[in-house]
Length: 204
Image (cartoon, rainbow, N blue to C red; front, side):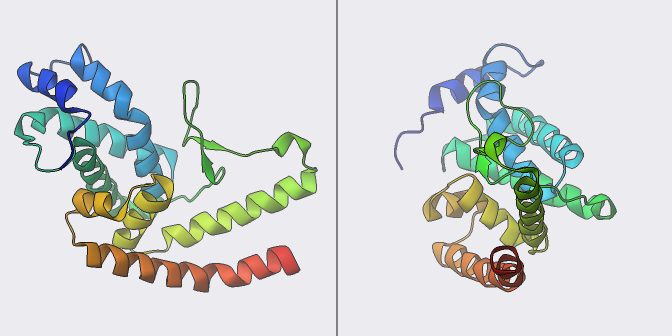
């Protein structure tokens, strides 16, 4: 495995017990807060649950960081905790599942808020086009949220976070073959859900 870019920062955190968001733990939080929130938001489907899952993720991360042994990339371990926290939370509060989608492209860099999505060129669009596109985006997110938790997690890591098959394999502790088969099933499920929607949107 290549050298982990987080190794020095993680080592500093392991040397000092966590007493709050300060020092190296603050640096680690700042480095991962957006990525963790994005994963939690895409899996849970709403801001409230995403915040709860992200908080749980960092709680586990800080309590157990001393156990990390660099058998995988640190980022893979973080993603694994975030995915599990999100899926566990949805199982507990499935009745509160509220789907929303504000866009299809992540916003990165300082000053971004919410799930971190950008709608390019919206200011130049007519109200009817904006409304139609928002309706389509909601249908896409609904389709993603109808996937099983395992397929939803793998779809988020691949297409929202941009992880490679190998990184997904490490994050979820599954084989490359399982990664590929779950993604293939996710594609088929999304195709079935979205083909009528896309036909209506573009051809209707």
